[in-house]
Image (cartoon, rainbow, N blue to C red; front, side, top):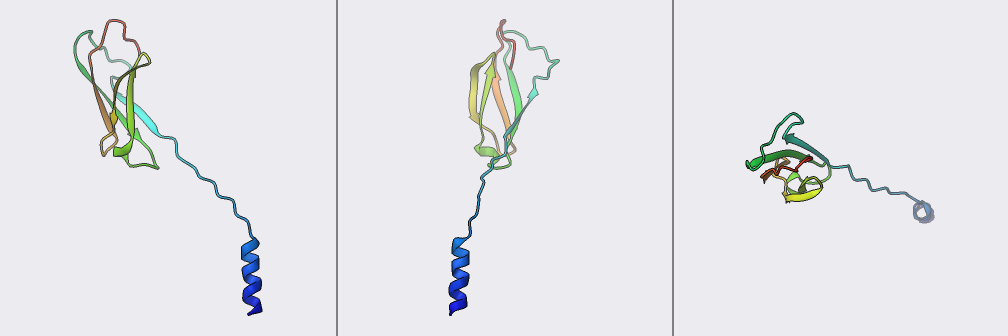
Length: 95
């Protein structure tokens, strides 16, 4: 009985450090490409791929921005795909 008590005391006195980590999510624009030319006033679909090792792909919230302004929001699909219907304006420069 004494051995069990000693072992319990040793376990009870041990310390442990736990560290939670969360992988950085990824996002890639697949269309338009850097060489694409979008035409003012002509609707187009922006396409992308999102990923996260810690969360289900279809739970990832995606926001599309053009020149820093939100133009679409939603969830990625089950493969991490995301799309945004957008009509370019003459002053739009960066997606």
